[in-house]
Image (cartoon, rainbow, N blue to C red; front, side, top):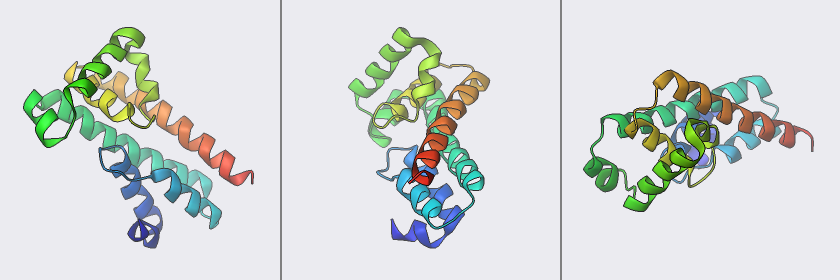
Length: 145
């Protein structure tokens, strides 16, 4: 994680991007450290949001173009992950994508959105809204201490 801290906003972008994939990276820690070191909050939120959304776009693409074999063998999604994400779509509809930022369920949701061929524009609006709201909330929380 130290390597991300050395690069400021670039490190924040990288950690946010990777956090939206299956890799165990925390963009929240990186964002908090930058904010506590007097980085511009608006710039930090924008960088984190763009990085995290682009990571979700990669997940969407894997679901959209990837075969079941790619999803399970290469990306490590279990059959249960994929089934659970599809059930969430059945239960909550596409608006469940507002929760794409939630740990554990968010990544499979974005892959399932691609696999289910959810309209990409709608995907982008919902995922960006949810992720932006999360980073704004985190920023306000960190700066209020």
